[in-house]
Image (tube, rainbow, N blue to C red; front, side, top):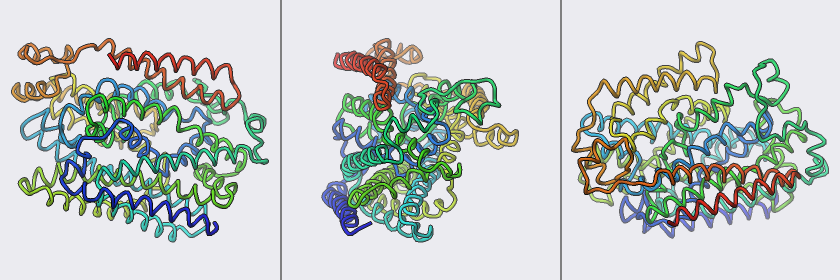
Length: 575
């Protein structure tokens, strides 16, 4: 690192903090402004903010880890979420915007009633806003620590000090600027970070040690470049080739995307994705922003990371398996010239800060709106609630510092969260479209995986095969609980249907009593849009990859299909 590198990093910090200062006064007006940007975000800021948040400092490292261990097809652990993401776009984005609530957790009391609804709201506020949130903050912090250690060769204790200092800066500007500052900063940080990652991929790929795409093909086995894993029933081959058992692959593409809760890919939408949809100007902006997010997140953004991961296999072949993610960091350290090194370090700060800022704002919205205001202080003025929100932001920062020390393997944290939410996803989907789902359905679906997971682990069943057992058990439990407990009162169901009017045959019992309310229709077109959206994302992903690796005919066919799918979807949306 030279003086110019440090100056670039300094300029980046000054610019980010300037945005926070600019929006601080606006954010202080009310909690609607602080947490939802006054429900006035255009679609492109909605989408950019979502995709920036999912680009954390850990993401390129985790993708590198997956590529080194399993080739390009190792990314199916998260590529499978495309199915659920596009379901959110066409079936749920408009419903979230229409609901008129501040947080996902508040949904509990507009959909259900009585003591169970109150309990569910408070429980989810703590579970998501505190417990899950600090786990996410912990692994993102751990990734940033790894970057500083690998880049600068400093002791981990020193890297921890620097990361926590940066976190303090993020906590301050998040507390100052609210969601407006977070979203605008996200847009700047995402562009900055992606430019840096693309430059790194180009430099490393064309280095003499790698020798371009031709060099990768000559130095790595062909199956490393496969977009789909080899599917085999012979478990003995798994150690020598990049392969999955049939059951493992089906767990990814057939179960995980709809059955497991995961931040940023919640079935039916949720968390900060729901927050962004609820912040959009209107239903169409919510849909278009979420659609843009899915395409950018899955189809465009991964390739610079995948390229560096493949190059790391050539450059650092002797890295231990549990340090595979360090290949990305070493590539930054060894191949970036003066100036660009500072830019990419700043890019990782940008990725880190965009995610941390969202987690602070999102988590504090739950703890303020669904815990503090709902159960402790109901009738204070807006300035009081904004002040408390800022204090909660600082509290989240402090708690997450301690969690950071207990997070070691990034992809391991991914798997843990997927298992903890296994089976919950179907409830989160059906609660919008089936009147019989009640608060106890959600409560039982949230608790059951935590009871079943230790038993599954004791039996020696590892991820992803554990999903079969966890999803089946959780689904059976919540279905039994649903039919053994009283349904939500008709008065509450009618109130919900009048507000959200989701339509569909599973609301017929209620909608028949409310002929004056026009429910949504056109589900065949929505399913067509969902199918074509999935085709669009995957063909874009594989088309771009095919062209990068020299398979031009395949690439152009993929992209032609993607263009046709996009045309039909946009035409359908405009009708």
